[in-house]
Length: 254
Image 1 (tube, helix red, strand yellow):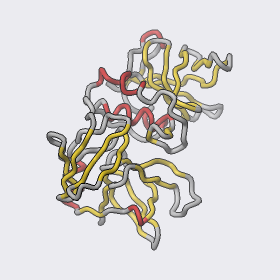
Image 2 (cartoon, rainbow, N blue to C red):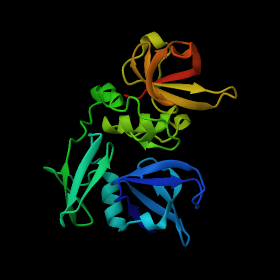
Image 3 (cartoon, one colour):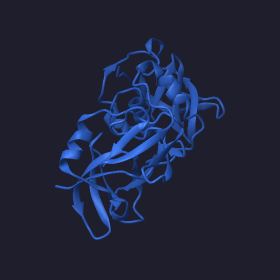
């Protein structure tokens, strides 16, 4: 079994091993994975944090040992909480990372990957659930991107997953998976900041998720990350003058 780590700010992860396949998620800097299958140009991986399976380009693969993988997997390392953070390696080479990037073995602005020491310039996450609204608002107006997990493009479940990780909670990647977590909140009037609201399509499949900022308000990625009204019927978009998403269930994770 082989293992890897993302040493790039963003790595696109595809449904199949080819350039034309849709991007289903993204690896951020410092995230680790196990290798399931390899071809000449592509590697099928399983992301450690959420178990998501996808394909990455072999050119973007950085191998780590099984011992290193287990150490990364077991620890909940600090995350970059700046929209854009700066890192510098021991050679003086600088690059940028995005909010949500992992800083392995971080201590006093220094973190380590494969014995390579990096200096981090930025703010680390609080791992505090009370900051859920603060972190979600950092993404306001970020464009929607299927499979995206950064402020340069993010989808609805990638948004909730990253915000929750900044607050110290790991949840699955897709909306329908996230809907299986936590306990039900029966009425919108009883919601609290940080509750997740889920929405389904005409077939009853959960296809959308957003974060409650306060009773009657929700922040979610739809076209862009935006704040809309929420009631028992669903999300009401004042600009369009209509409901855009039908409420299925509200969950309290923490």
